[in-house]
Amino acid sequence: MSSQNDAATVKVAQKSQKKKRAKAARESARAAEAKKRQIVLRYAEDGTRIGDDGYPMTKARKRLHYTYNALFFLMCGFFVIAAICMINSYFQNQTITEWELKWVGGNMFNGFSVGTLLRIESLFLLFMTAVFLFANQKGMAWMYDRKPKKPVKVTIMLMVIPSALYFIGCAVLVNVIEPVSLVTFILGMLLIKFVADVEREKGSLKKVPVARVVVKK
Image 1: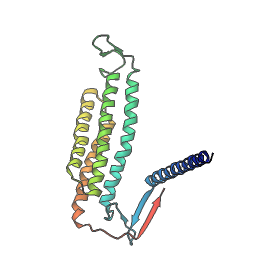
Image 2: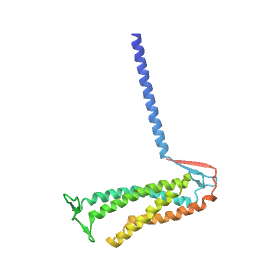
Image 3: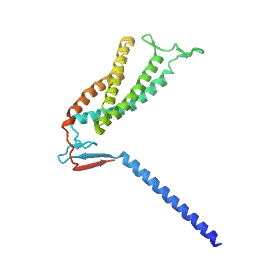
Image 4: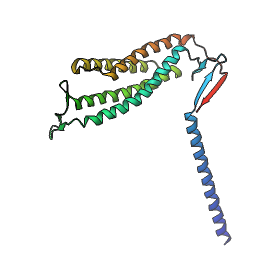
């Protein structure tokens, strides 16, 4: 009887311990998640904001940082618009052939199938979604972590060249001013200038001590 009581006591203790560990793990996960959402701003004694790399955030560095942030939000917007274009392309009264599996007929615009135009637009948006993601990651890594500059150049060229060709193609063939490619081209040209400005002042910057830290949730 005593051994049974001891076994029951051990089981209760083990269950209690498991509950405590599970609770501690949940609290730790919540704390880690809350910490991820926090925005930590560091300032020098004169009020100048300090970047994650310890260098002061000059006007050029702020401009580049905000531009890369804009790419991230545009990436999310482009993905949503791409999905909308793809869905709408199937509601243009087109029919698909049984054997060739080609879309034929449907609504037309300036001699082109609206459904086909929407699918092409969707593919372009998805391509730029991926480019913006890598541009944001590689740009921030070069700016703050001293990573190579080559990926930054590649992502900018992937923004500028395809968007310019796509814009010209839409204007000449379809007689439409395509806004996404225009915005992307302008952002790419701005990045060329902003990256050059940041690179120009890199050698002259010195790390400054942190005098004040502000945590935003």
